[in-house]
Length: 358
Ligand SMILES: NC(=O)c1ccc[n+]([C@@H]2O[C@H](COP(=O)([O-])OP(=O)(O)OC[C@H]3O[C@@H](n4cnc5c(N)ncnc54)[C@H](O)[C@@H]3O)[C@@H](O)[C@H]2O)c1
Ligand SMILES: [Zn+2]
Image (cartoon, rainbow, N blue to C red; front, top):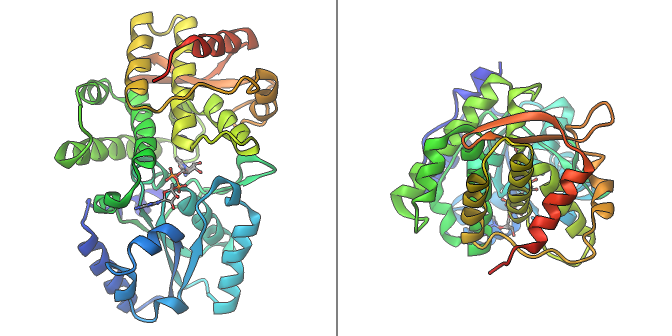
């Protein structure tokens, strides 16, 4: 069943072809109504180009505030309330358009609505195109812990239009690079080498790398859709990254998901080095690449290991009371379920704090 859904994954397209696909779907017979869950900013930016061209759109759309603080039950209830108001049946279709927050939350709301209504994902950030739209993970944050409540639910189709990236602020664009780096580091040395040679992320080279990253993630997910083994490699950078991100939400220090993952990649590469998996030169190269894209920040002094511990112990990968990490076996190959001691984590943080940031 999973395979069948993925066959529907389609080619990269333009805004115009995206609009045609939406219009075609709106007219298609067979659905008991087509509804939209859309990122508020995307709606604003693409009102003219997309939304005003769709008939009676205002009756069919619910808007999402894309902020980690609101990736929660309250916003999910807003979507369910909209479904109640519209009497959305199980035979309806929902088109979800936005970044990772909107896709995760929207897909979660759909997967739980009447035990599941069909949905299509239209990612609008680099991060969502390269990563969040693939693999069927849905979810919301709960009590400040990232993605604590969620489901596996696969979209009917995924429509990717890289042209949507034209309105993306530079900081948000860079966040997507973190996930692309992660995928290359755990799965493809050639892709990583290609990335290291890039000076400007645009045009055909951006599309080529994006496509490579999508195919790599898709391949890994197809082998282990429910993350019982291999898929865990994709959590590289995320154990410490998620803890930092969660801590930053409760703190006034702003750290976006991609930025937290970037720091996580540096910390967890250093742990891989301390555990004799990669060489010091490899670690330096990873750190250099991540820093080159201004993805790192120095951490506030009160981001202590003790405060991070609260989030680390809730990490979904832990078992038998041990913290389990996904690390690098070598550049281009990940490993998973590695138990790591506090002492090693502490050393990685000390190393990070001693680095100079641009
Ligand atoms: N399900 C998964 O497998 C998976 C994988 C990776 C990340 N994620 C999740 O994704 C989230 C991060 O996603 P993100 O980085 O896309 O952030 P996001 O969804 O918060 O979007 C970032 C910002 O960009 C705006 N935006 C979105 N598209 C735009 C566009 N085309 N033009 C202008 N502005 C636009 C949004 O309104 C928001 O302000 C995290 O919650 C993370 O946990 C999920
Ligand atoms: Zn991520």
